[in-house]
Each structure stands twice: as structure tokens, then as C-alpha cells.
Image (cartoon, rainbow, N blue to C red):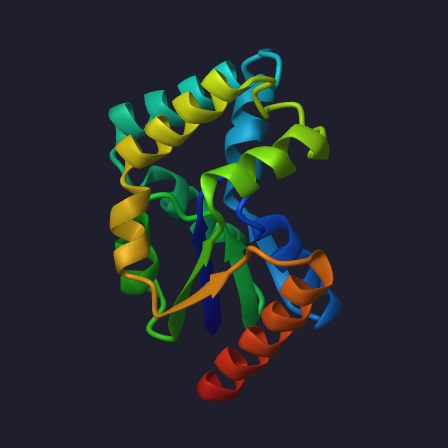
Amino acid sequence: MKLIVTVGMPGSGKDELIGVARSMGLATLKMGDLVRDETRRRGLALTNANVGRIASEEREKHGAGIWAQRALPKLTETRMLVDGCRSDAEVTVFRHNFGDLFVLGIFASPETRHSRMSTRGREDDGPDLQEFYDRDRRELKWGIGNAFTLADGMLVNEGTLDQFRREARSALERILARTD
């Protein structure tokens, strides 16, 4: 199996990368969907606070790699992109289970990310700047910075959407060519 795992702060462009990957025929899995599904299963509204609380509670109860472990049974295609790794522990779970792994970091500045999140309209995006920074601190506490240090490559997403899509396609093509 050839697995590409993304790591990036909220609003960095991971959803756009998923769209590019799907247009290239790659199967995808969003780790955040696992958390949102668990939040719904518990009968909670999909707010930033609820989703974050469930993600944290499960990490505290089952260990930092729990969401990667829960993703493993869903990784059934021969070439896949997994979106939204949040810690070095999750990278370790994927590396242990898939020898053919490429960790791709996606970076965008806080200002750029906040602007994007203010307009994308996802239920679990906080409405104000304080919630944005609280969410960043929470994700940093989970170890996303450590996951970034383990990235095999990086995409910087500060330009236009079309520019990012072109760069993302090019990066995915290079990664897949390396692993075929």
C-alpha cells in the first residue's frame, strides 16, 4: 500500500488537497470525520468545543495515537491519502503499519488560515479570533508541531486557490512516482 498522510493546522488547505487527490483517483480518508462521527454518535452538536473535547477525551483515555489506530481498518485501497494527522504518535502508528508512507505537511500563516476559516462555513469552525487561537493551542498541545517535524515534504499555501491546486497536484504526482 502507498499511503500519503497530511499534517496541517486548521484552514491550511487540507480539504483542498483532498479534492485534488480525489480528482487524481486517490482514495481519501479524513481523520477529522472520525472525530465528528464520534461527536454525533454521542448526540452532541458539531461545535468547535464539542469536537475538540471528544478528540481530547479519546486521546487521554486511549493514547495519543487513537485516531490513527481507528483509521487503520478504513485504509483498504492500494493508494490512499489520509488527511489530518495531529501528532507524532499518529505518524508513528501509520509508519508502523505502512512501510510505504509519505508525510506531507501543509503550511499557511495564522492570518491566512483565519481568513479562510471565517468564510468556509464548516460547523466546527469557531466564529471569532479567540476561538481560532484556542483551537490552534489545542492542536499544538496534541503534538501537531511534532508531527510537522516528521514531514517528508511540505506545501506552502499562501497564494491563490488555483496556484495551490496546481502545486498540490504536482506534489502528489512526485510522491506517487517515488513510491510506484
